[in-house]
Image (cartoon, protein in one colour):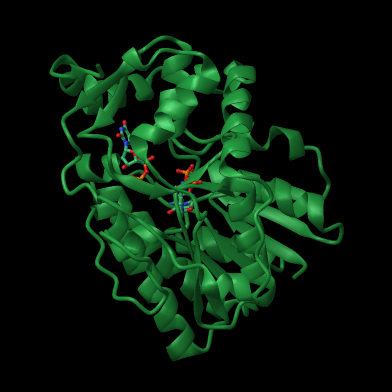
Amino acid sequence: MKNLLVTGGAGFIGSNFVRYMLGKYSDIYVVVFDKLTYAGNLDNLEDVSQDPRYKFVRGDIANRDAVARVLASNEIDTVVNFAAESHVDRSILNPDAFIQTDVVGVYVLLDESRKHGVERFLQVSTDEVYGSIPEGYFKEGDPLEPNSPYAASKAGGELMVRAYHVTYGLNTVVTRGSNTFGPYQYPEKLLPLFITNAIDDEPLPLYGDGMQVRDWLYVDDHCSGIDLVLQKGEPGEVYNLGGGNERHNIDVIRQMLAILGKPESLIRHVEDRPGHDRRYALDNTRIRRLGWRFGQSFEEALERTVRWYVENEWWWRKIKSGEYRRYYEAQYGRRLRGASQQD
Ligand code: NAD
Ligand code: TYD
């Protein structure tokens, strides 16, 4: 791996991954290729922007010419694809962009990678492709039963990755990460939304009873898992990356409020998300065999994350305006007006 293309590198996990890779490897050249949708943000990469081993190119993974150009002109040998529409609630409001990027875009990226002799292709996928599991843990061979348009589009992209490996021999690997949190996460996902609302004493719109379970993974651990699979994963294989931290949403939020010193009375139980998956949980045996280890406990990572949002208002305040306010009203306006307060 010398010339690495990180698609979607201006988003949350992608930008953390770029920082991680530039910090870990000296002889690497990283090209970020990103459409800069509402979720893409060059502020996320500000601290690496002067690094001579880094370059940014604006473009769409579904645009064949643009993809061909960035692969050829930078002699790319390795592709890590983070580019996606990534938020379940937005996929329920309007699935179009999800099919376009998460299915068609992945296909175009695979096809051009094959034509340009890319030596390794890693697709960043999600535990949501499995659907919900009431007890036990999903293994990589389990059937895919996605329930939201987001999860279904990610599953579609992933199956195309499989086809390109089996049919054309492209050297692919897939990671299925669990719910990730940390610095630079767009404040539409549970933790950054609730942390930034709580800082401003705004209500926290918790869906339904708040007893849904997610398996939380700190972003640095997600990045180290992706790097490990990139280096050591078997071609054609899929790897679960679960944080091993199953928590009820309500408990995570209570813990976050305690760290901030804010009252639980900010919590509002609002109308549930349609088709809301009750529980996600992953079996990590396969990635553990490659030697994956976590850098910190969930508690440490949550504290660090809360502190980051407290100390980096410059980053999130400018996001929480304009388009964001319109989305917030569409998603939460009616819900919050009909909400009940936590006792
Ligand atoms: P994000 O929404 O923060 O970032 C997505 C990035 O992709 C943005 O920079 C956006 O501009 C870019 N993008 C969108 N459409 C594009 C296109 N057509 N062409 C080029 N760039 C485009 O997402 P994230 O949370 O960082 O997630 C990154 C990846 O990890 C996604 O593939 C997601 O499915 C997967 N994932 C996320 C989580 C999580 O908890 N956040 C967990 C598991 C897997
Ligand atoms: P989210 O961060 O959207 O990730 P995902 O849907 O990929 O798991 O949501 C995490 C959990 O938090 C999920 O069970 C939905 C819940 N949630 C709320 O209760 N309220 C909210 O406003 C959001 C965004 C999420």
